[in-house]
Length: 221
Image 1 (spheres, rainbow, N blue to C red):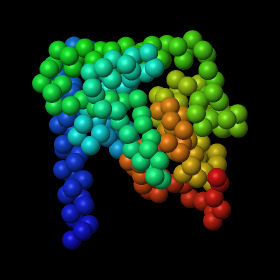
Image 2: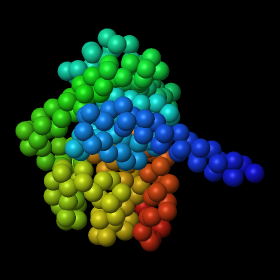
Image 3: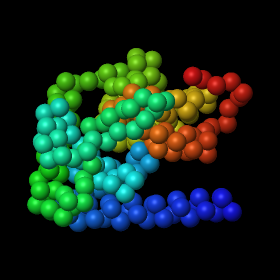
Image 4: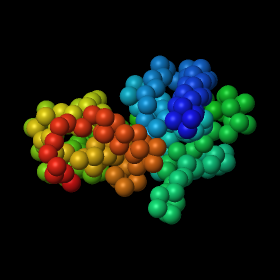
């Protein structure tokens, strides 16, 4: 039956993802203790809270920024891209090809560059002392809602994650729509709500349908 086939396919894909995550952790162990968590329909890899890579569709992607992106381009790593409503959207993540997996010294060096770049970005944002309202998708009204829910700064937003923050907000307003959840995820990951990858968007929508609070027929957009 199609339903059972989809479940089996999901289990197989999850197993493949985890194998790639473990492979990355083993190869990149010199970077420090690598933590993984579900994100974008795949997994993010971080050291000390700094996300420097993603595992998506069996592939490892290293995070780049404006300062180090040329290094990944120089080594010929393909850039992550996906199509949304016929529009190609490219992200600053670069795919690790098989040849690079076989060159563990270079892979570790590039991963270290990705990690240091992430740490620099985090340090620069902290130095700017941005308020919640300065993040993508978070205006002054949303910032005030988050304050009321006990989420006073970016560190708390990142710590709790989009789902937990949504649940905290819903205690004060049971009419919150899925758009609020998507906006929170975008604020945390640095994406405009409309640019969230499809896998991440679909996973969050499914979670929302299972966890949305009891509400009236009206929807808060």
